[in-house]
Structure formats: C-alpha cells, structure tokens
Length: 467
Ligand SMILES: Cc1cc2nc3c(=O)[nH]c(=O)nc-3n(C[C@H](O)[C@H](O)[C@H](O)COP(=O)(O)OP(=O)(O)OC[C@H]3O[C@@H](n4cnc5c(N)ncnc54)[C@H](O)[C@@H]3O)c2cc1C
Image (cartoon, rainbow, N blue to C red; front, side):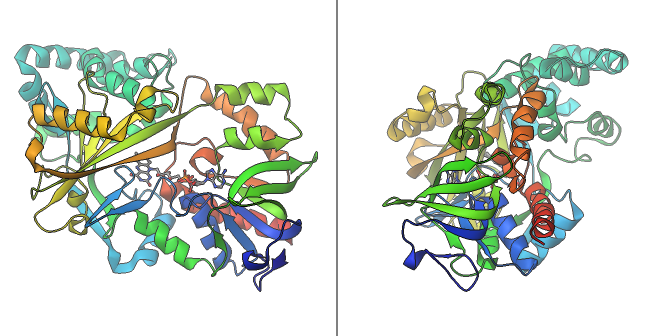
C-alpha cells in the first residue's frame, strides 16, 4: 500500500500489507464528513475517510427517486449554535433558505396545530376534555417544582404538561418512537423533542391568540436540494481521493494505550491500516464488539444494555400538488405503526416536480422486529390503506413508492443510559489516539450542528496530539 500525495492511502495501488497512515476517519455521515472538512481547514490533508456504503451522508442524506427528492427523515438545520450556523451559511450560500411551515397532529381523525393550544385542545377534544386538561395542567404548574426528583419521562411529562395532555399525546407518542414504556425512558428525551411545547407558548396563546407563538417546526434553515446537500457540500470540501467508499471497518486491534490497527473489508479483500489517529463515528456498540483484545466484562455488559432505535421510511409519490402545508404531521393514535409524516415539498419546491408531491412516513422499530424485515410491498400497501381511510390521501393519487431503512437512527435514552454509556465511553477514552463522536460514536442524541462543532473541537485536539 502506498501513500498518495496527501499522505493518505492510494487505493489504486493498495495491496494487503499494512501501512501506517495519518488520520483514519471512520464513517462518512455528517460527523465523519465534518471531521474531514475541519482537517482540510486545518491545512492537514493526511487523512482518509472510510465509508462502508457507496454513498456519503449516513442518516442525513437526500435520496433521488426519479423526478423526486426525499430526505432520510424530516431534517431541518437547528440554528442553535452561532458558529455552526455561520459555517453552514458559508458552505451553502444562496442554497440555504429559511422555511416557515407549521407542525400538526392527527388527533381523533382531525388535524390540529402542534404544539397544542387551548383552542386546538377544544377543537380536538371537546369541552369536557379541555376542562380536564386545563385543570390538570394548572395542578401540574402549581405542584411541579416540588423537591422530588423527576423519576422518568412519564413522570416528567405529567408534571410539566398535566396528566391529561401527557397521557393523550406525549407518553404514547414517545413510547412508539422509542419502543419503551414512558416509565423506562429517561426525562432527557424531552430536552430535544419538545422544545416548542412550552408553558410560555400556552400563555402567549391565551393572551394573544393562537397564531402568536412558534410552531414546533416553525421557521428553520433548509437547503434547496434537500438536507443531504449539507453532506454533499462537506464531501466536496475533502481532497480528491480522501473519501473512500465501499470500505467496511471490521476490526480493531489495540494495546493498553492506543488503537494499533483497523481492519477493513472492501468487498473483495480484507486489509489492515495502522493509523496514527483514529476518529470514530460508528456506533460505540459496534466498536467494542470489534475490539481485540476483548474489553473487560463490565464494558461488554454495558454495551449489551445500549440500544439504537431504527426507522423504516415509506415514501409515497403522489400525483397531486399538495397534501397539506405542514412541515410534519404527528400521528397520535396508538393503532398506527407510523409516528410521523413529512411532505418534502413543504421544505423546498425543488423536492418534487411541478404539480406533484410526496409523503415520507416513519415507522420506528428495532431491527429485531417484524416491521424492519417486512416486505416493501406490504409496508406500502398497509400505509396507503391507512392514509386513504383517514382521508389524508386518495389511493388513486399514488404514482410510486419507495422504502428506505435507517439503521441506528436514535441512541435509546432509557433510564440510567448516562451511567451505562459512560462506562463504554470511558473505556474507549483510555486509547490515547482514538476520538469518538457523532450520534452512534458518542451515544448522543445530537444533530448536525452539534457534530459540526464537535468535529472542529476533535480536530483541534488531534492536531495538538500529532505535534
Ligand atoms: C428521522 C430523523 C430525523 C432527524 N432530524 C434531524 C434534523 O431535523 N436536524 C438534524 O440536524 N439532524 C437530524 N437528524 C439527525 C441526523 O440525521 C444525525 O445526527 C446524523 O445523521 C448523525 O450523523 P453521524 O455521522 O453521527 O452518523 P450517521 O449519519 O449514522 O453516519 C454514520 C456513517 O458510518 C457508516 N458506517 C457504519 N458502520 C460502518 C462500518 N462498519 N464501516 C464503515 N462505515 C460504517 C454509515 O454507513 C454512515 O455513513 C435526524 C435523524 C433521523 C433518523
């Protein structure tokens, strides 16, 4: 194996011998790509990104299906970190637009604005339900700040929003999304899922009317050609030949202090690289299982408890100009296997041809469950029937469909996940030349802006380590 002019591996002349390289970045999702981009900006191009699939972007891709484009789930750029927002603005230029679109919820067959407002509760639930919800909400406000610690997510939801609202919406939705009981989930899941469902929002509604407060989706930044354009632009920043597709990481060898080598399978052969530094974005569960020598039992036990939630997406292409104006629609009814739908066109008109639209519907599951393995045709037929029956679409408007499976979409925040994941992360931290980041790499329910910031920090640390 020979290095190219960047100090990375020249795959054209690769053979099965080991070779020391600079920095090996594992995975070309947003976190891996952001690391490559930050390496380039640091002026260090002695790195290679190893990606198992034939495309980059991981779970934040935009897929082209004929004349349609769709994202792997309803993505939007969260402008929460000034620096990450500035970098994305520079990366995309005029391609980045501000989108304003509401969120709504399908409740008892009616579509109402989400977050719920007093008027929406009245519209969806009727007078008696509204009185009960208001009473419970006020009681939760009065008794909320007692000294008792929040025990779990269901407890949090009831204390913050009142028992009625919590049990109608938040608990069933979260249980379906995460595949666990509300009493088994950590309150931390709320931090990133319910930002707009606020007391302040409800008060604003009461005082100024329903349209005053922000929607859960509301205004957000979104690239013209889909969220995957962020990954594409980051990939464009990498030096030619530094992003290697079809390279599956299959093993790590470590000594007490560092990762000594990484084994790669490229479909035809297996070979070993000996990077000076490894930047990992693969799920930590995978990494531990691939490590030689085998980590201590305590670490294996912890890994056995960590889980990722997976998602099956079913995409319907429709011969109608629009289904709704919503950025996302949540499905509250427990009888549905799907939790959420979005209409790509409501984020950018470039996502579907003129006069046509599409719907991307999420079925959260574990890979061990039947839904993950279900035949595509059966998923599509079942969904079309459900949406037709609820009046969201007309069956005759469906002109095509696609199914896309997202592995390791969400690290499951079960009660106590923090201590368990820390056991694994602390163990990995003992390898001085290993950095791990990203959704799977740090068992963190983060978003692209988080990983852009994290990547810059990691590369700074790597650069000082290599000096
Ligand atoms: C439904 C949904 C909605 C979301 N909404 C938003 C949103 O609105 N805004 C936002 O910013 N983010 C959103 N996200 C999160 C965003 O998609 C993730 O944060 C992001 O994809 C995580 O990036 P990552 O690089 O850490 O991991 P991934 O995207 O999972 O990338 C990991 C990469 O590693 C590769 N890989 C895995 N195993 C191996 C191996 N053994 N060898 C080599 N390569 C390997 C994979 O193929 C993949 O390319 C959403 C995610 C989902 C699922």
